Length: 387
Image (cartoon, rainbow, N blue to C red; front, side, top):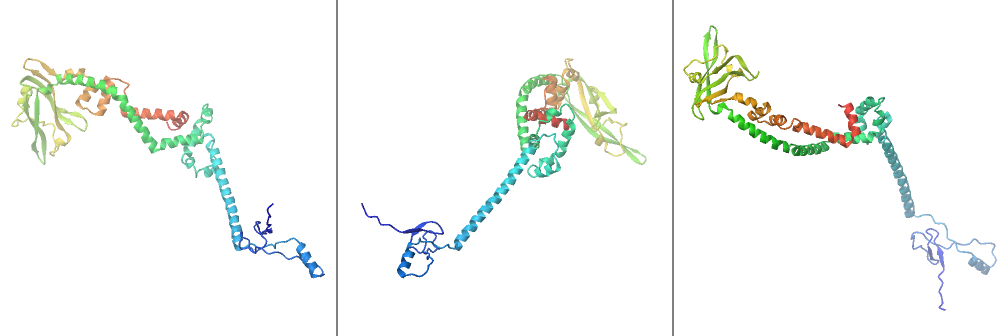
């Protein structure tokens, strides 16, 4: 067997590592000195006995004071432990608040919150304050009614989420775009049917248009008359006549002074002229309304000269009259003479489908249905409070 060389070792009293006995300094905690302790002496006998006695005693290391580095390490460990306790305490508070918030959010909307609950939850959920009056109105509306049990199922969290959705500009814009897209698809078939009807009635309108056979240009001027301390002014006129489709035998032209403010004819400033009478309206003649006068030349600020060609008689005796247009539905006639989007929608309702909805009506209806589908209970409760 090979000879084994034994190495005498001892345990460092500071860090606990095993080190050779002949080392004065621990290689693991270098600042700690390692010394062999001395054994207390009894009564002196002989030097040999003393040596034997000393050799027989176990070797002990003295208790060392911690070095500055070890002290710093202890302080650091203490701070870490203390900091961990603080963090744990803060986390505990946050968890408690979250639990408290969750408990209040899950509470029925019909259960009023205390002032303490409002203050405790308003920081994370300012909607408790923002919607406080609305929540109160909801409770006043349904508590004590047969519907109370139904609406008690709504929680604060549920209603707050719904109200936030309704008040969100982003969500409102998304919903508006959806509604407009849906409306474009909705009205396509109506526009197709309407165009067919509009083309038919426009042709009929043109066939009963006497103005296509007679073109009149009215020229106006003032006539004046001195009357003691002031001057009276009268509107006067003369007419140029053209025949776009050739000569005609006769006509009926209604004309006079029209009030734009009141949208009516001046009650005694109208007349019906035949073709012969129109030809007599020349610049040198005195065709004017003496019974409509003003002391300043501003008569046309209040009235305008307007005319309507009611009928013409063609050379072959055919009469083209606006009275034939009475067959055209009023809304369609209004659209033909003034093709605005509003008049078109009214004409679609009149000649295509009475249930047709215009854009504004459709978008409002679409939006309301969408909000109801999102949460019917919340929608119905809000509708009771805010009809």
